[in-house]
Length: 246
Image: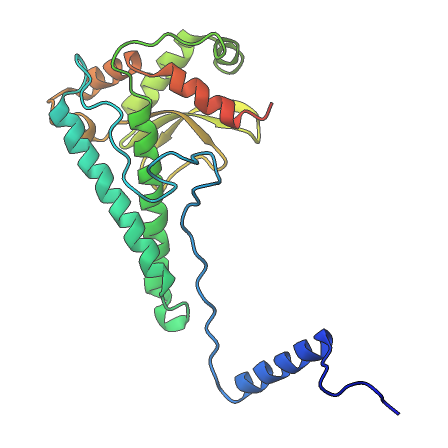
């Protein structure tokens, strides 16, 4: 005789019953919608924890309102306005994705939103790295970076010549990145905010789109030359320390 209390249901029995009910519902033609996963930054995790901007999905303020001898207040304000548009585009894309139709009928719209999310997200992050690696005056390459510069690039001068060439060739972004997969630094061209070196960690970022220098009526080559003299190498060193696999 089974003396078990009929009011007590085992966990296995409960799960079995639940799956049976779900199966019956699907068989009857019911539709089960999975809730979309949240895709917002967390304040307590990640490389950018505690920093306004990309991670908490809020516009970060300009680190410097003016860079005398390089970029005017009007230029930086106009550029920052373009950045804020990207933040808005990112938040709008993610809000729309939360309720987007993931079925066949909504596939085109869903794909568009995913592409907008990637493009806006990259644009936000690149702008924030750009603004934060600008210095109001020349900053010397820190001692901690010198051996790495020699190891990966041969010399500072060789790196600078090649980076300037990348910036001159690029239509949107030029960057020095660290790839932990091959443990090397690379100068890269990013023509379009949705193009990147997979696995790369940004060290130096230069925006070469016209909105970065057009208000000040700078020629692109002059702008790049001045940028090279205003890199905040202390900021770059901090970035590398966070991601170096050693």
